[in-house]
Length: 107
Image (cartoon, rainbow, N blue to C red; front, top):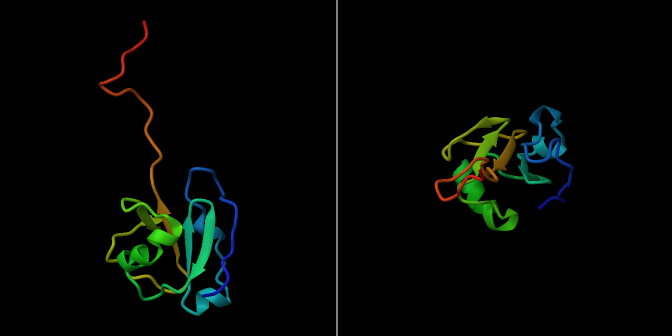
């Protein structure tokens, strides 16, 4: 497997901007840019569905089973087939603001 490249996120808590991704020799060879958290990897996943890619990467990248898959910035289903040069980003909401029925308001 090729060496992995680590990059800083564009915005903390938001998916990395996919328009910054430049095709490289790796992407032309069947690699997909995979972003999860603060890490970016070039992984040979071209031709795989997102379901299979998630299974391949879930333990290594600690991807939550309910993380949303974005391909080139657009939400994609588990049956979506990846092609070389695309960027696959796994995101998960960290929480919600507001009150729950179990909290009391301060008066």
